[in-house]
Image 1 (cartoon, rainbow, N blue to C red):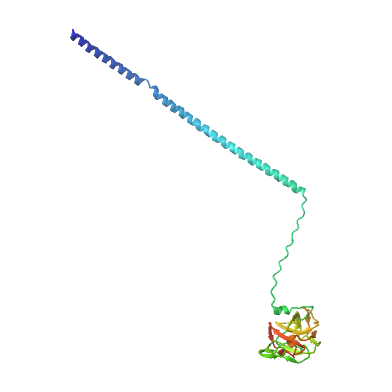
Image 2 (tube, rainbow, N blue to C red):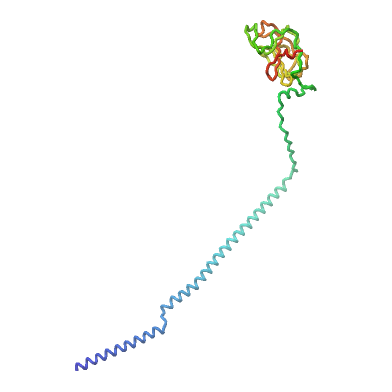
Length: 275
């Protein structure tokens, strides 16, 4: 009896294993035949995503285009507004211009530039025509001069050695000559010249400086009642003035005419030119 039960159990187990195998094979084949729903979902999602992406791109493109169109329209409108404003301003200015009467333009005449004045050397300037005189100052080394006053020379020209001065009680160089003459004696022009200066000097009293031309000058001192003025052109022999009382430098020498001749401001001996 126990052997029969054991054999039955073995047979039952084999049957159950067979059924389980058959059922497993059936499920396996069924799984191959029917597609799994889990695998389809991602595919559908991918398709949906692929469809959404062009739509998004289109939307973005549409938005960008719309934005660009809007900016372009705004710029165009601003340009139109600016042109209208400029046009209005131009019309306003034109109206103001039409209201104001236009004066004829007069061209200003530009004065012609004068050439710079040439510097004239002193020698040439002294020889320019003055005071209606037609002759020019033309003193030279060969010119001769008149005695300006009648009298004796009491102090000679001496620049190479000193001479004695009684009033000063000393020896000194002397750049002129001193001609003795009574007070009131007429003093005449030794050579034609132009009076450049009249002044008072402590040693020579009232003094007349006269340009002779070519760098030469004549000096007349110890004068009074001067008959000429600065700027006058005085002819040779004409009256210049009168002998005055001597200054304190010539008290012992007495009344006299102080006469000096200069060449380029340097003293020269008048006796070399006396006639």
